[in-house]
Length: 127
Image (cartoon, rainbow, N blue to C red; front, side, top):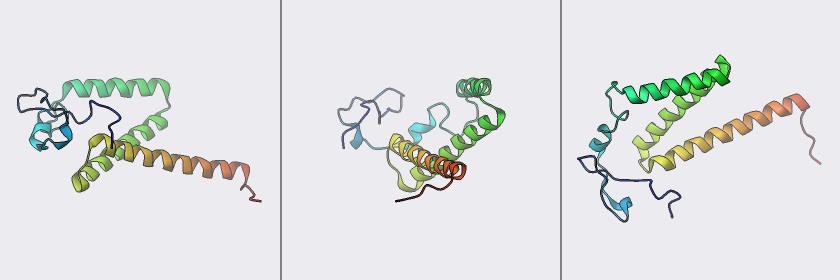
């Protein structure tokens, strides 16, 4: 399977520098390396990510109703948990798992929108 994005799967050494590798898919995965990346460990002291998150939430509040913001944030949280659970149980590439979870959300949204449209316009008659 060819990668869509050549920068995905970058492997970092213990010093935080990118390891030079032509094919990093075969590099060993060291879960301790994730702990050093801001916002990925258990440490709640992530001021840069917290500030960026608050900026995003503020931007959402400027353009959406409180109910829409709540729904968006709930979706993000649900997807985050689902991605974490899949990675824990099955492993795999983070970007691929995120894409899979996102696709599932869009499919559920499309199904719901179709049901709403059918209710509003009446069931479509099949010939």
